[in-house]
Length: 77
Length: 231
Image 1 (tube, rainbow over the protein chains, first blue to last red):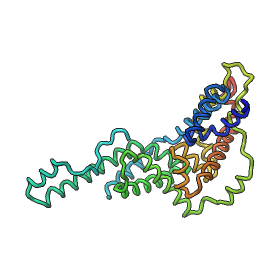
Image 2 (image 1 turned 135 degrees about the horizontal axis):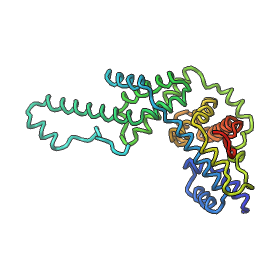
Image 3 (image 1 turned 90 degrees about the vertical axis):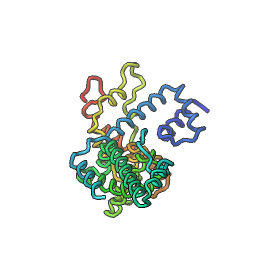
Image 4 (image 1 turned 135 degrees about the vertical axis):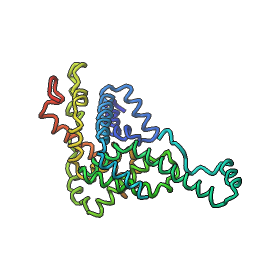
């Protein structure tokens, strides 16, 4: 197996690796590759940090109107 | 939820039984216990909702793309969650459970409104995936200290990401929100959407590429990743 093929495989499986969706054997294979391949490691770090930034958009201060509404809902039960 | 205040499904303790028999009134103490249980349930639910409210609203906003609809969605989801709290076996799983209700409520609403047009998705699926953002930014010939990828991540505004997410077609946005924002596994997303896991995988892959493409189109003209460029 050449280095190029290993990189192709690593890139192809990278997102599932970061999602924790690979089985143990495949996960270890990617981990080993990232330990030795700077290019793929940089790609993995970029994807991981970008995903963190995307996840941050899920936190938005809830308006007081919604908080009041939820409190009112709780009181009706 | 690391410090669940109380499990309201705990069986009665010997102390509870003793207090009941000592009272001599079979109606009074059980009713008190039920009231206390109800109060504990309410406190637990309120504290968890308070803790998660900004994430629930933000996720609702990413799903609906509209502040009024996001408020309606969160309110409806929390009404459902409160009415079904008895069915939650493991209180440690409350967070995942309530986000699943939020997403399922959104999916049900969309289905009622028939706002997920399959034909539009199929047409879009026929196009090639845009180039990955990393490949557009990465320039291996650069010196080690010049790193456009890092510059982009450091300067990328939340508004750029929000616009890019909001611009995705519903089927792609849904799986991206479920997996990247809510932490669903592929199997959990598949179950909520009633689609195969393979479809989740392909929509997620394409959705992320489209998201990166939108981020690139928004930030590249402003030179966000360029040395000395704008933010």
